[in-house]
Length: 435
Ligand code: DLL
Image: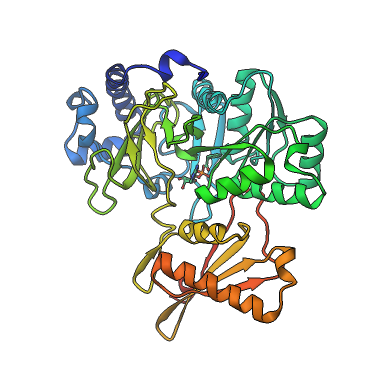
């Protein structure tokens, strides 16, 4: 039997959701137009007024926002309420440019935490659970978001933050944590660390994990589920739309339900901006319907995925998004071929390697090169040199079959590739350094 945190909303018939979204959209467009001069200018340039927006059928009349708009308006330009009404900020990591700062009123925090509570309940969580939150706390939204959701549910919340793996394991074992929240790469590392310390999967009390903030494959899911002895759930979100909990998996695990009472999701062609029909792959765009302080309309996430409105047997009616394959800007073009790191990850795990790898792309004499460094498990490391090069060749062939281009595979000693406590860095594109 499915459990819900806010059953009436989560199982609301789709027509009713549409009506609710329409009503909220009209109000939100007016709010933004009146309080965010930057977006008002964009609307004026497009010749659209709040009075032109009568419901979601008019959504495509509105201009898009992208990360560059948020950078341009840094730090206060997108704020739609007086600063004195805000109670918190969070911020992106700023690895690809200036940081984006997101602002929250108390109302915004409440709704965000509700979304995270929905995600925890969908993963089977109740107030009886011991929720170990090892997403980073601080400017990153992961820690605070899941922490807030767990509090709303009344679960015992362990605010561990990321890192200090010895302490994570000690608390996990001594306090009998039942739900683990962290990035999938850190979950894999915790699984590996438990094994190294002699624990078997059944020794811990964990039942479920809520993992997100970075792309991860089904192969990675199976690896984590086996090493920790849990069921692993996906959770999605981004700082610009409040943080984790925009979408989450239910027990069916056929995509993540998007909290449609708070967000309208669209899929567009990333090149033309054209809205694509349900089922087509494209860039995910969000309009936040309830956020007061930082209410982005038609925000382009750069995440590539597919939406599905097929009924879900969990009873939730909200649209589902597929796992994002990675951001459109994570996609590498290597010798003219589109390559996502997740494709390489899927091959490695299928071939029996652990998810410890690094992809290096370079350009030598005008030709792109693809080097994949993969760690051997300790028992594989004792193989002869001949056996290792045979393994390298087999893995290179498997990657070639998947991508259509030849990589150079380097099998390296156990523990030589850095582990991640937050979002893993899997790709080094040296071409960017030369260009
Ligand atoms: O990563 C928020 C979050 C925290 C989500 C904890 C889930 C759990 P940002 O740092 O702003 O926010 O990064 C957002 O991360 O646009 C996606 O590209 C990626 N991402 C987030 N969740 C997933 C996921 C947080 N489940 C960016 N699968 C997004 C794949 C994800 N990619």
